[in-house]
Image (cartoon, rainbow, N blue to C red; front, side):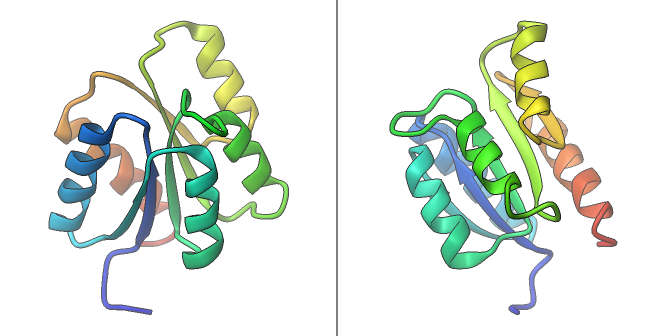
Length: 126
């Protein structure tokens, strides 16, 4: 493994969000791969075996909840953080029910995102 804090795949159909979050995480020392749809996120997950998946709930091809559920069928160790523009409690319940470890509502700040990522990685002892 490379000398980084951890490996992360981020997937969001909003290209600017993906680009900005990828850069923030890289500056913090993480190795990051980015996708703009759910299927591409699954492909990156299978190829790189990241420690954390950051998934937007609403994406083309395959949404984040479907990706989360599919990954959880075979991997109980990976960390999953869901992103959404939806503030409804039911949306959060669905994401957490699919296997997400945490949930972040857009718009979010850099400090909150990084605090949640660090918190999740502490579960891995990092």
